[in-house]
Image (cartoon, rainbow, N blue to C red; front, side):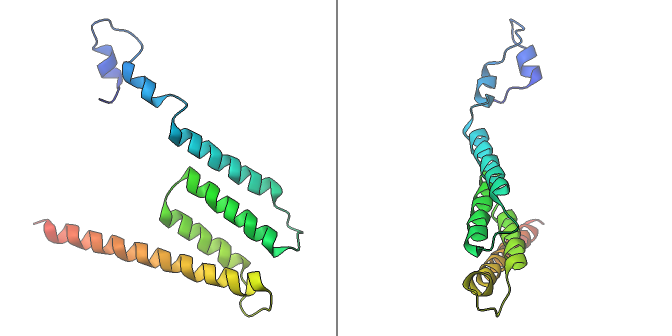
Length: 134
């Protein structure tokens, strides 16, 4: 049973503490996961250097940031959208460098395909809901 003000107020003792509130304490796994994600995002932001010439450094920071976003908001569509935009911003197709010439464009295509698949699944789910409703 979810603890609301009404259920706590309707108890015989009229106490201010509700026994179900213990489940929403500050040490829940979701809060710890989100705090870890915020910590990873902060670490990636602090370690970022716009003057770094090493593309592997920016790729590793992008992975850390993506993991941080996933820990804060575990939504595959959101993460795929963020990865698509970030990889597209770093890619330079056709250049001889491995990371910006080949890896980032491949990641962009894979993340965009993930978005298309999620969009098609949502359309199929909407169609099945519409066909089952009279």
